[in-house]
Each structure stands twice: as C-alpha cells, then as structure tokens.
Image 1 (cartoon, one colour):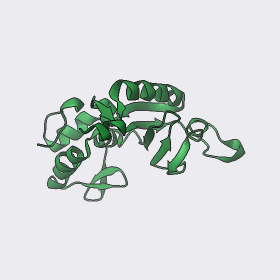
Image 2 (spheres, one colour):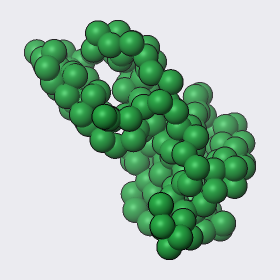
Image 3 (cartoon, rainbow, N blue to C red):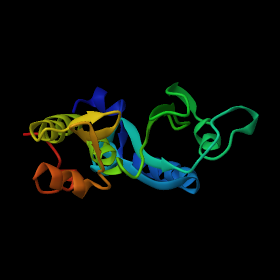
Amino acid sequence: MSKQQQTLKMKHKDALKIALQVKAQLAPHCFKIAIAGSVRRHEPYVKDIEIVIIPKPYTPGGIFEDGIATVVNRWQKVKGSLPCKYTQRLLAQGIKLDLFFATDENWGLVYASRTGPAEYSHKVLATGWVKRGFKSVNGYLTKNGEQIPIYNEIDLYDLLGIPWVDPKYRQYP
C-alpha cells in the first residue's frame, strides 16, 4: 500500500474504536447488530465502517421521528433515506458508515456478504449459491421462487457445502 493510499484510510484500531461507539449508539434501537466489513476482517487500514442491523420498529422522520432514526439522521447523509435496506452516512470523525438493514430471515446472508471482501463475497459466496440453483432477490436467497431463510453465516456456508471461514482469512486466491 502506498503512502498516499494509507492517508486515505484509517488505522484499524482507530476505526474499531469508532465502530464500537457507533454500535453502542445504535444498539438500544436494534434487535441485532454486528460490525462487518474490513473492521471485522481486521484489515490494517479501513476506508469505511460497515454495520449490519435488525432494527426495532421506528418512525423514520418528521416531528414523530423515533427509534433508530433519531441516531442515524444525526449523521450527514451520503445516500439512502430511512426507511431503506442501506444507507451511507458521514461520521464526524471523517469516515463513512455503511449501515445495512436485515431481518431474521436474511441476517446470515447480509452479514456474510457485507463482511466481504467484495471479491470473496462475489466469487465464493454468490458464485456458490448460483451453482447450487439459488438466486439473491431483494436481499434474500430464493430457489424456485421460494425464499430460503439464512439465519446466520453457518447456515449460508452449510447451504453452499463449504466450511465456514474466519473473516480475517476470507480472500479470493
């Protein structure tokens, strides 16, 4: 990694500290929450923070805004307005937050895919489910038009017939 590229990214320990602060702010408004992406993979340098959540019910805006919206809408919006499946926000520390919304039925799919890295998610996970006759439709795996629940990462790996891989070792050869 060149010196210039390093200055565009944040050291893992600094990004992890911010990610844990964000997680703590969001947690009271979530049924489930986890840090994903390069922070979870323990990359030495991180360009953004990725968090996957299953939010508790909330009102997204206006004078009756409540729940998770009261936290998320404090951060500068880059893309995606609540309610949504994905929103990107700019945190005060200068790093972007990618926030992915999941349900119990697609948690494992979203969490594994968003842990990445992108090439691994595409060439190992997505290629694996396509080879087995599955499709990803609106964030859910389907087969023959039927939605297949993926409650956790192990469910996805089992479905693909491959062993679970610790995030810090996920890479495409």
